Length: 370
Image 1 (spheres, helix red, strand yellow):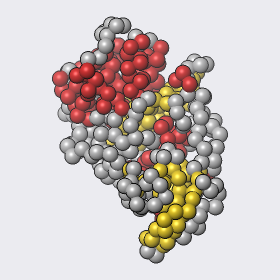
Image 2 (cartoon, helix red, strand yellow):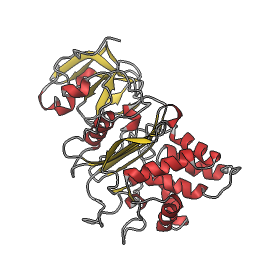
Image 3 (tube, helix red, strand yellow):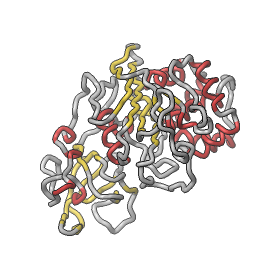
Image 4 (cartoon, one colour):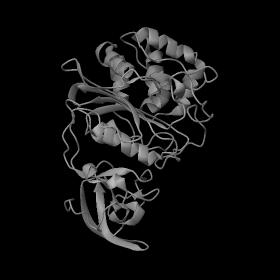
């Protein structure tokens, strides 16, 4: 049994309800500032709109514009050369920062944003502020402009452009190039088919816990942010989830969030997940299971309910996870606690010991046996 401070609000009852229906409006967690837009392409209407014109620093969502700038006017029969696929694919799938920085440096930096604003008719998008022109992650972007970008991709772009960009977004890797788990928001709230481009930026975000971890600084976080830049907040931790959901890319979803200074990555990951799950997203299918909070840092996700095999990945500290079922396995001791039950996490296709689950008992009371 576990308890004490570990049994925090991350394990409250609403978060554990299976099969929660779509809500009528966005439910923004306390302390979070958000801009949200959900556009139903089948009806041509918005089902969610919250602060849609508010500007956020884009973080890695701007990589959509970098890719489109590269692909602009290439012609309907253009095939991306292997040398360019080698940087474009990691940038779109694994949010590779080195690829974005190289393209930004070689193709005009802020001029890329100016070009794309004009081409797509974006209303709120703007280059990074004066003094920070080299920092592509400080590009200003809004939820409604993000919907415009995806509508161009899906409805107006040449077929090869659409297929290349969206095809790569459908292959989003759980572990980003910098070692951060990037399957939050849309990727965690809904089952496939989805396509996502995520963004994260914050000095309080600890190092990534999965995959290969880059040691080089990125243009998003390498330099301290100024106290303010026009109407764009460059100080609070940012976590954004954008993309499409459902068969035929029925819904376009854009969720931009800012979190209190000092917020951990796991807490921000949990909060954007709760917000995204509350949205009315036509065509979306929600994964079956029970949402539970976790505690401790770098919890290992194992391929089976035991510690004999190497972990598949590690969880962001204190993150909320979807539990599909539970089973007895190897006894785990974390003094003063002992637990033989393990939770299966379908979104990771792996297991964690129940000792790290925020539950009043060793066996979760509402979760089925595997």
